[in-house]
Image (cartoon, rainbow, N blue to C red):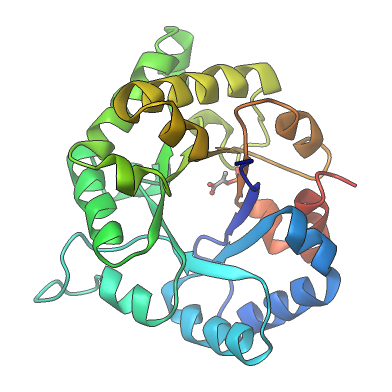
Length: 256
Ligand code: PEP
């Protein structure tokens, strides 16, 4: 079965709940059924926005889906400040980011913790968008493929083929995130193709063919078409440009 492209907007720590409603309303006004038939569109707002986004999307039966930017690997308990998979599931979250490079960098999340978070997401029937990718020094040493595959292996330890079928992986070279520096489509394809091959090795061809692999890193309306033309890239994880309704809509239309 063909993989439906996914365009996911990572709002990071931007937009309060009123601004969130405003942006989702504008997106819903611009995107048509034809767009939603062609791509899945997701927004990943801050936790404090999720209830408002849910109410709007459910109330108006919008075809936009949503999710969290992180989750705890615990299901409940004395973990001040954390949000569980159960809480996200109760709010109707479809997706959750795991291992975004900003979490790895500022919150010291390692592959073991990402693995526990991937498992927590699956326990609550939320699809993890597992973020992997190398820093600039690793690319300069030409170790980007092996580094990214090691992150993938670490985060998927103990994950079954049945679970992996629905996985989303986002390849995000850290040097391209929020920098305006976009990987060439060939660079992105090199790593995304290697990720799919590794998934085939771990879970077989059928599972590997069903996993969506996104590219992330300074995606804009004017560079998305080339990226989407690559065979192993099934969408984008979009940061800064997802805060601009017009730009994100054009990204969802592959730059048209
Ligand atoms: C991201 O936050 O995952 C991202 C890719 O950000 P940006 O598009 O701003 O580079």
